[in-house]
Picture 1 (cartoon, rainbow, N blue to C red):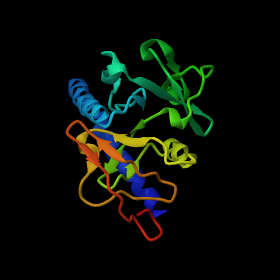
Picture 2 (cartoon, rainbow, N blue to C red):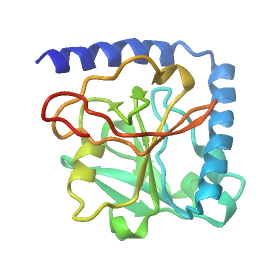
Picture 3 (cartoon, rainbow, N blue to C red):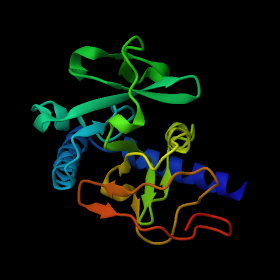
Picture 4 (cartoon, helix red, strand yellow):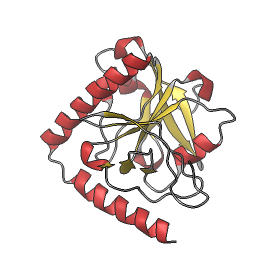
Length: 203
């Protein structure tokens, strides 16, 4: 209960900071973040990447695919009930349409992608910590998707602005939360190392 209350506090605080970003500042930070992502994806040789269409001042990743995407394949999530389903999208500006919660999503008639088809999944969030802790919107879609994988699956990369990365202390953690492998912001790319969040938690 205490953890859930703490998560709500982080969502409120970071959501307000994100919403307060002036339009030009938001666009500039998103461009910088895309450059960091581009460098990381190239360094690690990741060519099949799940991304997202930004809403509510989430970092705008369109800078990755609008110039041509460096020969990558891009996958976008679609909410189907309580689950996330990923679909490959060739032209996001043409092939996405309003989905659940107003989030642009792929057409459900297109083939769904298996986790093995993707090298990395870029996940938005409201707060991250250096051990890979992530506080999302509260609906748990990415956590449930990751928990459903039979094998290790693609890298999970948390994406946000630099003020969303908590450097002192750890975010609240609950059983079922999925630790991200990397956090990328407009300032840096951080390889996350596991730690113990609480008795019985992940190491």
